[in-house]
Length: 166
Picture: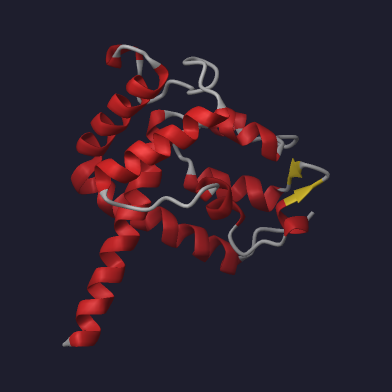
C-alpha cells in the first residue's frame, strides 16, 4: 500500500487549515444553519440533530438526502459545493489505486480522512474501511467543516483577485 507522503499531507492540510480558519470565527453560525438544514431535509426536530449525530445511522438519511442538504447549504451560504466533494477532497491528487484497492481505502486515504474529518472517532477510520462506507461517517459537523472549507476557498479567491487588481 502507498505511504502517506509529505506532498499529499500538505495538500490535505491546506484544506483543513482553510476550514479551521473559517470555523474559528463562524463555527456556531455554520453549525446552527447545518443542523437546521438537516432537520428540514430529514423531517426531524432540530433538537434531535446534534453535531455528532450520524446522518445515516442515527437520523436515517439516504444518499438523496445528501443532495438536498448540499443544495440547501449552497443556497444558505452562497457557495458551490462540488458533488462528491468530501470524497474528492479525500482522494485529492492520489490516483484511484493509491486511494483504494478493491474498494478498500488505503492507509494514505485513511490518513487523509483523519486530517479532514477530525470529528470522526479515529477508531472508525481503520484498515478495512471501504469507500462506500464513508457516507456513514457523515455528521452535521462534517457538513459544517465542508461549508467552512468552501467559504475559505471563496474568500481566498476573492482576496487573490483583489491583490491582482492592486
